[in-house]
Image 1 (spheres, one colour):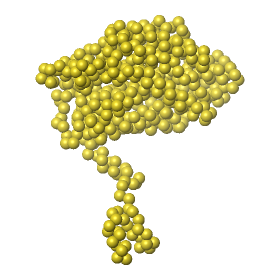
Image 2 (image 1 turned 45 degrees about the vertical axis):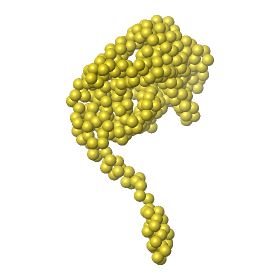
Image 3 (image 1 turned 135 degrees about the horizontal axis):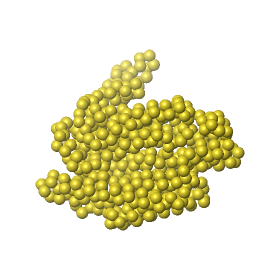
Image 4 (image 1 turned 180 degrees about the vertical axis):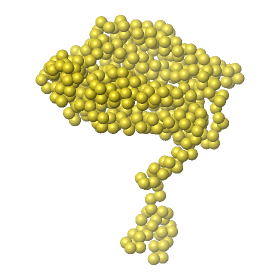
Length: 467
């Protein structure tokens, strides 16, 4: 007995069971039952009213943006499953992909409330973008439900209620991108590599959200082919319901309207302008070579990964947009041209060739949605105009941020203020926010309200060099 007591005294966190005579180690860590209480205990001190831009502790900053990444991952998984689901089954509000989307939405709304109430992790503009995006998204949900009560099912991903969902999500992601870019640079525990990777991942979510409605054509072209083979992917109940909605029999014209509801020029023009300008802005803000190619490759790789999972569980296949690889590469190649206002013109020509050439190659070797090849001049002109605007905004914000940076260090010039922060918001506005900032809280690190400055002489994102 004395030896037993000595052992219990010498070994920490031990307990002696008198009945069995067993000495066991006591777990002192957090158990599953204790986890909620520990989380609340950790988070409650941060739940205080504050203005956007207040000093944010590093651990809270990491948790907030990890939460956003989780919300966007659930959104992407749910929406990918959802579009495939709607090409097979009748609509169901409680369908598994809707539940997955709902969990992501709950997380996003919770984070938006935290940013709005506490002011942690974002500056004023980022907070407004997140608030507006969340509000539009929440308004779109009941409108979408009403639309489906009236129309019965998702006839098209291009409906107004769906457009509001995409716009709301885009604003949320834009706010998160700005918040991460301005905030992450101030924490030594967040390496430059991690900051860059997370920023690129956030732009990948943005790109996926913008491209999402075009998945209707990517699924639709194969749905039409399955009908022509006499083995339609969609369940008979879905096809009959869609036919009743259109007031006609289940025949090929009805399947064509159901599968490909928009004109053939929409797919290449939308992908070539809306999709590609996201890659251009990502290249400007991230500032690393091959950013656009990497984002396009990650998106295509994701589609390739989920394709066999969906098909293997009897859901319809889709035409994966492999042409994005050529288009993304064209964006990055254009940034080797160092003249900002010449680059958009040459870049638009290269990217348009990548989009239409890639579609032609994909259509010849695999499957591609129908596209009107004659629409390329519209795509090139619209992309060039959008690219010029992006270059102009970046140049103006860069000059403004540089002048603010120069005055903040006693008149000495801070050369090459980051294009990313400048493009995500005006330095003049963020400077005004900084003047109203509350005093730094104990143990907190700052969320900067201007873009992080780089070393003198460093290449800017807009000149084609690495940052």
